[in-house]
Length: 182
Image 1 (cartoon, helix red, strand yellow):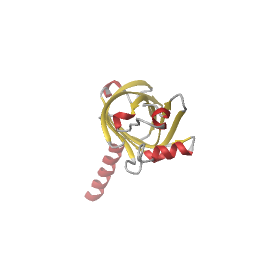
Image 2 (spheres, one colour):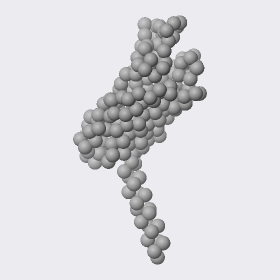
Image 3 (cartoon, one colour):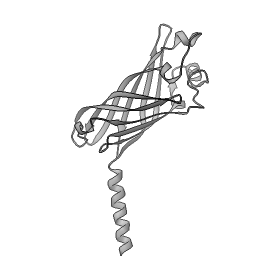
């Protein structure tokens, strides 16, 4: 009887713990680059993310080879050693905190602006960033969306000559859309 009680207590504890965490395995991240030569856009629908509302922690992982481009040659260049070297650096990561988590009511429908601070790692280079995340709560579902700029040189991706220096913008626009569930 005592073992049954401990088992039930463990199940209740695990259930309560898992409800304290929201996650997604199909987040969407898009990047966009515009130059006079051409626009480049790529989409990735395999982003994983975890949000812990009570703590305000937010982490996500982006499999870099999962970005899809309109042109196969763009995808080949993107994955190459000369650009993001996705074999050596297969993931980009973010680990941070919503600094104003007390301003967000994850139990009440509404739109909230979250201030997020943390470390973004791309191409093996980690940088501290602070961005805004729009959080929407509707019918118990939580969605996070943000748009921000990334300066490629800040992450060791630099082109000083040749076509890449004129065909790729020095700054890319990143858009992330994450639909979280319990």
